[in-house]
Length: 118
Image 1 (spheres, rainbow, N blue to C red):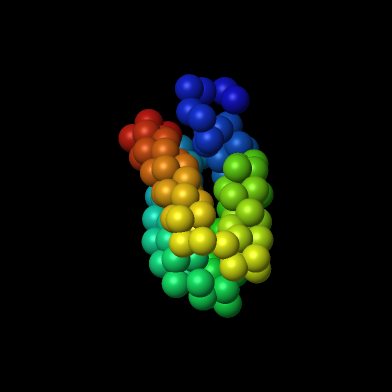
Image 2: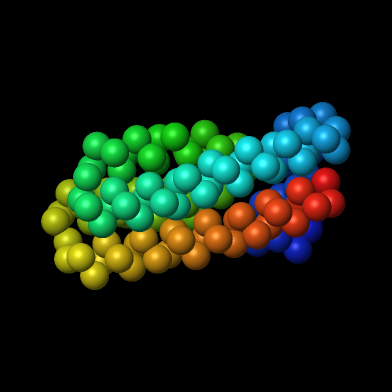
C-alpha cells in the first residue's frame, strides 16, 4: 500500500479516476457515503436476521469493496451469512456487526483523510 492507511490505497483511487485530484476527492466522498450506509444496514439487518435486506446491503457494497481490494469486508459478510443460515446466537451476530462497524469506521477515517489531501 502506498500510504499509511490500513484499508484504502489512495493510488488505487487515483488510477480509477486518472489521477485527477477533484475526482479523487469526489470518489472518496461517494465511497464514504457508501460505507456509512453499509455499516448501518449491515448492523440493522444482521441483528434483525433479515437475510433478504442483509444480502441487498452486501451486494450494494461489493463492487466498491472489490475495486478497492478490501477483502476483509467480503470475508466477514460471507461469515455473517453463514451465521444467519446456521441460526447462530445473537452474540455471534453482534460480534460480526461490531467487527464491520470497526472496519467501516477505519475506512471512513481513511477516506476523510484522502478528501482533505487528494
